[in-house]
Length: 244
Image (cartoon, rainbow, N blue to C red):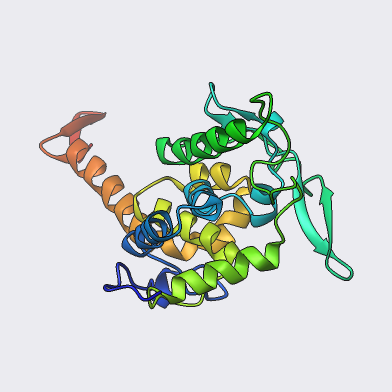
């Protein structure tokens, strides 16, 4: 399924997290989401919307249960993560850090994706209930992470975009937030890193321009305070004017 146009491009290496990764800029990310919505319109289209729109980890999204999604409050609680162990057996476990086990905020885009999945699953349930996993196979069992990855790579290849992984969507989300001027402390909280140092180690180099802006803002404040202001400090019979 070939696309007529390439809606995005890879971020430059300088914009990637430490360790190097092919990420997407906002146009590329939007192009991937639009391609999935228009050409596939399946649950993976909504799953990718949630991954990129929240910065959640792959295993957290695949393990998300409806019982932990409060649609009225626009907040899900990250309680479980899904991983493939040993010979590919799927295993649910709690996230490793306390910071990862938390409520997260949802944008209107992500809410729309969850509402679409809720409507589909309620229509399929004999009693119209929401239960089990948000994203699952027809029998309610979890999606295999490798299959989801294969689908992501297949669909991004159709757009001529870089070969990326599911975790790269999390890095992409972080990089876009930083480019939009979100403070690093808020980025860290959104990604639910255990410490701010983790976020700085991964993405601190992306804040070079922000550091320049900070010192220039400091200089402007000092210059405003100094401009036209001289104070007199008494020293005996003499008075010495000093810059404020």
